[in-house]
Amino acid sequence: MEAAVDEQSYEIYTNDPHYPASLTELSDAPPVLYVRGNLEALKRPGLSIVGARGATPYGRAIAEMAARVAAESGIAVISGGARGCDAAAGAEAIEAGGTHIAVLGCGADVVYPKSSRRLLEQTIVSGGALVSLDPWGTPPRRWAFPRRNRVIAALGLALLVTEAGIPSGTFSTAEAALELGRELLAVPGSILSNSSRGSNRLIAEGAVCIADEEALEVAISRIFGVLRPGRLAIQQREDMSEAERHLMTALVASPITIEAIGRLLNLDGQAALILVSSLLSRGLVERLVDGRISASAATLHALSSVGHHTTC
Image (tube, rainbow, N blue to C red; front, side, top):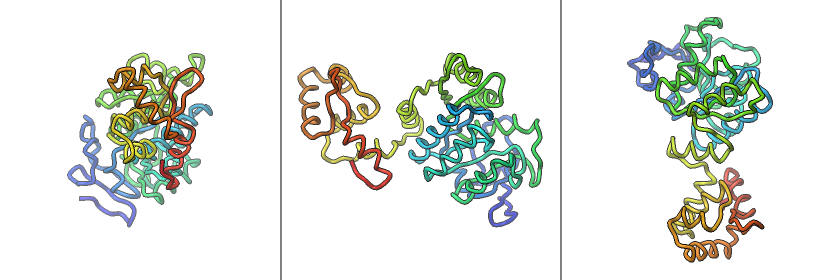
């Protein structure tokens, strides 16, 4: 069972119910975890988000977007708590009301890097956890980080690489995720940017390409079996048929043609037109100048306000 060092610090052994089962898949599973914060956070399904420490503004923005989508979908965000993409992801997860789990390359009671002090404090205050493989008070050591990266990969059901060079610690985390059979997601970047060479290489080798926010929503829905609140609001509407809900969920992601709607719902042309006409009359969709059908501005505005108790 866990040994409580103080009211927020624990030592968790492999026979403890709080020890994450996913870590036992590692060939070198740590025999003990040192944890500060909320032990229940370790039981939540999580998305690991990693990226370059020397992140570009693009990399930080992607990390923040991904963490926000995960948090709003009820998924914990797992990172290394380091500067750059990791810190951006952790801070945004907390800001969005989600749970952040930081896996450290030093003792769980040691602040490293110093720039992450506020992030680590807020992680605990917001109900998250700081996790380490090393005893209390252990300073950061270079060789400890590859081992830490394997735990980051193991804790999540999937790993998202926001920005990565070659070679890099981020790239090694991705390799660990693949070894464990985790789903690997990667965001493409400029082919002229060294910071994106690793991300682009992962996509070329088979990682799921996350081309935009909607693509991430779809991936999270598929992997975790959850819907972000806006999509959930559509699914819960009682004034829609199942076909209308299915279509509206697709239209929030991207406008599509009448022909594509027919294929999506397995309808002939006339039936697709009748369904779209009904949605048009209710102001839920609109026809664009190129003929495609899109979710209306009013619908999109209502969905964006779901988190503020506004319904679609």
